[in-house]
Image 1 (tube, rainbow, N blue to C red):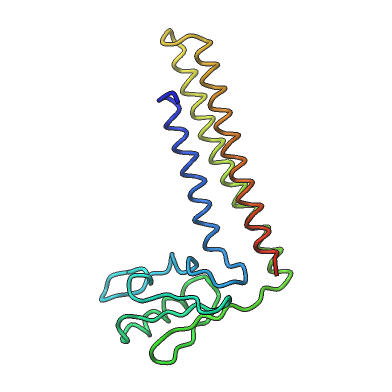
Image 2: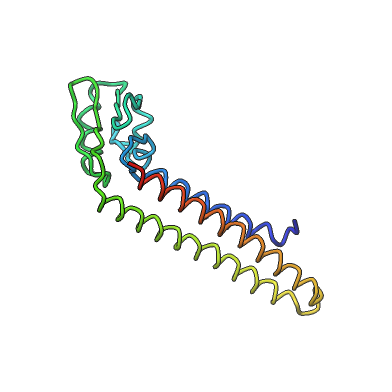
Length: 183
């Protein structure tokens, strides 16, 4: 690959990776420990990821259990989950915290699919913006540095790269939509 294209390839790749990480946090009726990835606990004055202060397990399809390494953190973890936007109330028995995921209603599933498609479209815009930036940069090169044919070749390669990443985004959106709609 031409080194002039690698910058745009990286931007597009990062956009797809961001979308994958974003989709991992979407609740699909099943317990997914990645839903806790963005939640931070106040650990002696330092915001710390939940994964760093306890053991997270999924004993059942719709339950996550968090066993903090220090029992004194139970209240802090509970507070962090309550103030987050995951929409689940934690229950604790003094030694572990349980998050029970309710079944999603049909309306909620459709709402989630709409949200997934919107995130996919936003991601495609990021990819297309990278293509536009590339094409603009290639046109600026034309002032005698490289031939018109080379510019055309670079633009064609950039378009193929864009198409590849757009297909990846579509595949991710389809897979996540199916997962959410599966009961």
